[in-house]
Length: 163
Image (cartoon, rainbow, N blue to C red; front, side, top):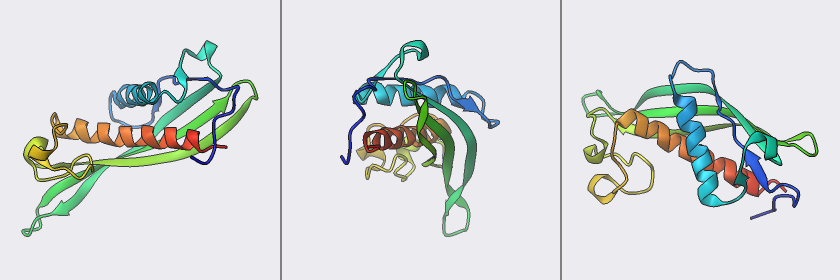
C-alpha cells in the first residue's frame, strides 16, 4: 500500500449509480455489489449521504457484449460482457473531487447456457467448472456480476493508494 486515507474521511455514501445504457436494472446490481465489497473490506464505513465524509457517485456509461473466442468451425464459443463506469469520489469537507476516473472490467460466459459446465474460467480465478464452486447461475448476469465485482475491487484499491 502506497498511502492511506486522510484521517478526516471515515465514511462513504454510495448512492445508486446512474444508468446511461439500455440494460434494465444494471445500476441496482452494480451499486449493491460495490456497497457489498466496501462492507466486506471495511476500508470506509458505508453510510447515508447526509452523514458521510465522502461520496462515491457513478454512472454506467457503456455495456459492451461481444464474441471473444471461436471454435475450430469459426462458431462463437465465448462472449465477453464488458462494463464501463464513470466514477467520482468526492471529499465532502474539503469540497473537492479526490478521484475522477473511468473503470472497465469484464466477465466471460459460454454459449451453452451452463456456466458450471462450459469449460470457461468465467470469473478469471484460475478454476474451471467442477473445480470452481462459485460458477453457477444465469451466464450473462453472472458475467456482469464478475465485471462489477472487479470494478468494486479496483475502486477500493484506488482509494487505498490515493495518498
